Image (cartoon, rainbow, N blue to C red; front, side):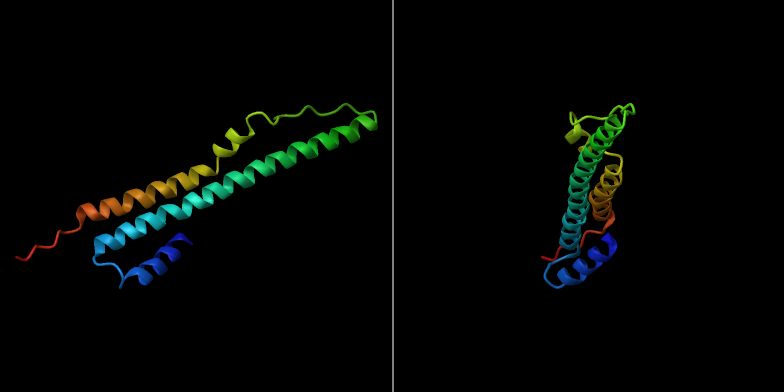
Length: 119
C-alpha cells in the first residue's frame, strides 16, 4: 500500500518540484509519515485491546466466583499498559518501514550524479 501511495505522490508532485532531489525529499517525508501514523494507530488499538481483555477476564472471574469455581489469576494488570502498547511486537514492522523510508532515499541521493553547473 505504501508503494502505491508513494507512486501517486510522485506523480502528483512531479511537475511542482524543481528537481529529482526535491522529489526524493518529498517522498522521504511522506514515506516516513505513513508508517508513523500506522504505528500510532497500532499503539492505540493495542492499548484498548489489552484493556478490554482485562475487563473481560474480571467479568469472567466474577462469574466463576458466583458459581463456586476458583477464579483464574489475571496475567497483566493496568500498570504498565501504556508502555506495553508502545513497545508491542507489531511495532517492529513499522520501525522497519520508517528506517527504510528514511535510509533508502538517502542512499539514492548519495549515488545520484550531481548535475554540472553552468556558468
